[in-house]
Image (cartoon, rainbow, N blue to C red; front, side, top):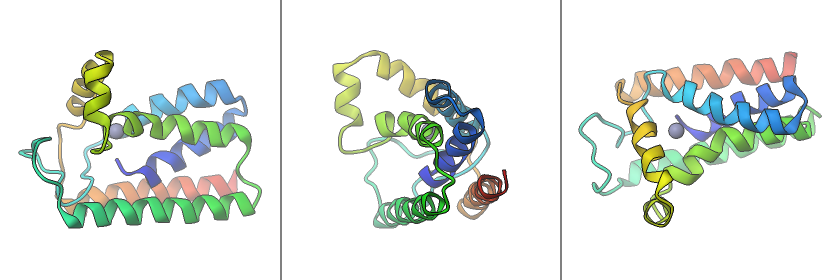
Length: 155
Ligand SMILES: [Zn+2]
């Protein structure tokens, strides 16, 4: 799933838990649970997509918008006093799996240096086997992000 969705869920868990080490751990677990929900991460995220396939401009653009939106939302939540240390650690835990495993510039190299990451990569890919169409796959994610954004403000 996209970073805005992961980080909002992780931040909400962290905010409610109120204990940074547990928030970090539950953030990582929430990543796996969210990835297991059928979704799509953009135009390149198709069942027949191979890791060696080139990444399209549209995919880079979508990820850039996702990161920018996530930053705007977190700056807003911070300005409203909704981001405790625990919330931030929840968000960090929630994006760590993708930060290690899904960054085209270095994730392959990391896997070749540290072999447990290869096993993690296989697991990470397997839980995301079921792909939706791009529109449905993004709608699922933004609906989840919106729900957790509202929960962050309300609770
Ligand atoms: Zn993931």
